[in-house]
Image (cartoon, rainbow, N blue to C red; front, side, top):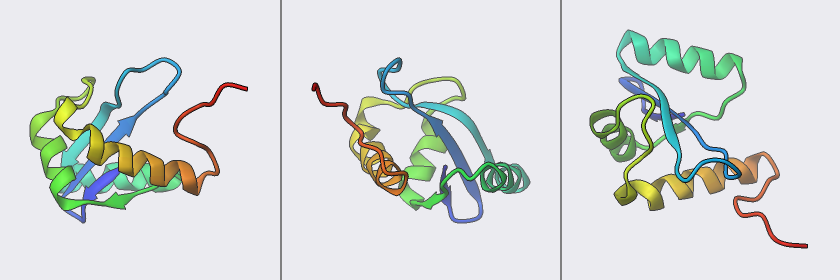
Length: 95
């Protein structure tokens, strides 16, 4: 979940095994953003503040669609941080 800190909220989903890029699964402003944050907290989903990224995702990506390639780097940095929090790696390595 990426926020701007209290006005916008954008939830992303990414499964590296099956998805080419993260997908916006929820987004909202004002009271809707507050409800999305509440749901994220109750499900232990990390909430990260990144004002420019939250604005870009909110304005530029519809729910159910993947993020555009110009946002890959910014979102990859967020995903890498979240994966480190959870003790996972972003890229699977061959054994």
